[in-house]
Amino acid sequence: MLHFKKVAWKAEACPEILNEYSASLLQLADSTIGFSSEEREDSAIEKPEGAGMTEAGHHEPEYDETHIRFLELIWGEGYLSPGGPAEVERVLDGIMLSGQAVLDFGCGAGGISFFLARRFSPASVTGYDVEMPVIRKAQADAAEAGLEHRVRFVQSPPGPLPFADATFDVVFSKDAIVHVPDKEWLFREFFRVLKPGGYFAASDWLISHDGTPSPDMADYLDAEGLSFGMAPPARYRRAMEAAGFADITTTSRNDWYRIEAAQELYRLQHELYDRAVETVGKAFVDKNIRTWAAMQKVLDSGEHCPTHLRARKSGAEI
Image 1: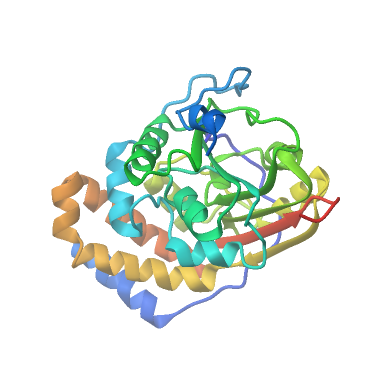
Image 2: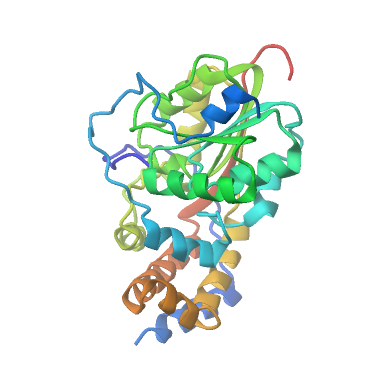
């Protein structure tokens, strides 16, 4: 979740996909607005020494308590991205986590970190984020759920990942890489902290092309108001290759999320609307309805293509 700066888009298109069902929902939406003792110490909110800074220097949180409450209402407790546990399992399909050391990069409010710990019995789960409000929320929820000894949360300013080389067996990320403009640097960091034979598995929000964003995409990015550094699948692949990764795959999830997003929008306009207004206020809800409507347009056109990413660091199999 680093500060945004202009990035160069590279080429590899996702197919254009249109669907009358989600388009009709969009029209409706548009019309609606009128461990051990050492692990115990590690489970505290950490700010490791030596955590590097980017040129951005001071980092202002983008996900405050209002954002957290609103997104959890849409996507579930602890989740700040769509799909819930089922989508996490799809991202990790075929990768063994039992007994492994797992990094959840961009862990947000910790919902996925908790799910990984409960579902897959890893040796450890480390949730990392630059946003202090979400780390505080994750830490509080860990204590309430009795998971503070199984999951630790690390916060540091934007910069080099505050972990030693070859620390993790698996690096996981759910829709967080989009906040980091320098994909090449980030994949070098992922490669560095992975053990030989370790896996990188993620989903992220990509753009389908290397040209200037369309007016619809520009409207969506403006509506989001977040530090989105979107890039195409080809740039991700090249960044992973340059970092040293092998067995690289990219799989578009546009066909799934464009329908899912339309359903989210419909629910937000109807059964969730009053509850959302009570939780975060009418102005915030209406602003996000407009954002969802703008996002739906670029999902329907295929310009916004959520994508699963996977790669392996060569070496001994884990």
